[in-house]
Image (tube, rainbow, N blue to C red; front, side, top):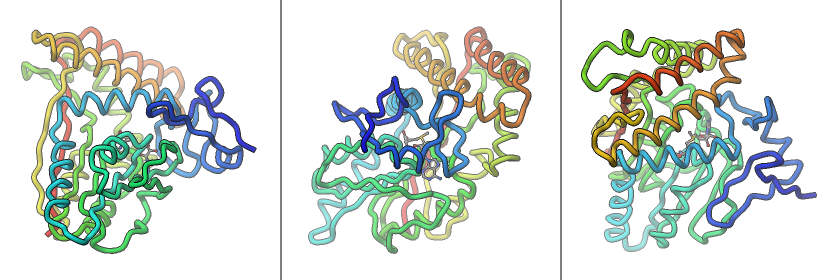
Length: 321
Ligand SMILES: C[S@@+](CC[C@H](N)C(=O)[O-])C[C@H]1O[C@@H](n2cnc3c(N)ncnc32)[C@H](O)[C@@H]1O
């Protein structure tokens, strides 16, 4: 039997173009858990929901990162370079924690000669059939199925919330990359600051309290380390990778004078509001509901009333040596 998982029913499913996912009842009970009216991954500790509202939020997040960050162009150029230089070997790219598979599908349309793979812990990737795309269920906390030196590009963007030991993921990426292949990483540092350099703990104490509580409980309960210390160090310590590190900022809110950046900041604030709301069920597992309401409400209020907020992303571009 097949059921149509539309937003009004279970709110799961990828919509890229007109494509909608049809999941069988077996698939739903195998991979998803319905809690608080939202869908979650059944088999992992990933703390965010995996349903349509969350996918919509993540797509908006990705769109903003494409504007502010350097990475996706780098991957595209690297794959074009591989195509030009490899006469017989297939060129392959892997997207770890692919979500609805938007990056994979966009790239597969632009580069039809490249074989694209997308992996995730839940089957929320689009079922849109492109001949050069393969989506697979794999847990990033396990060793990957792919053989050594198989991929030309490996991308892992915004996956740290689902990865307990980031060094393992980095060494797996290094193992499956061909010599000269590229690893692209991008992660939010889960902290904010004020653009004039003033003390964020004084200017936005409620936003800081939320982020500190989140970081602490992710670490204590799920073993997820703060992003700056884990991801960057893991890449640095991997002997088979030579890395370039970048950081880039995104404004939060409508304070930038420049009209374009004001629109980015306004949209990004909404993405963060959605993030905080999506974290409520996770925080409610470890804190009293009233405390969670105060933390999330305080975070959102600071995002609206404190001017000059921005946040930083880490982006790593590493070459397999
Ligand atoms: C924040 S989304 C990012 C999606 C995509 N990489 C992007 O940049 O838009 C994180 C994705 O990682 C997946 N994920 C979380 N933990 C995972 C794990 N242990 N193994 C595989 N995928 C995982 C989630 O299901 C979700 O689709």
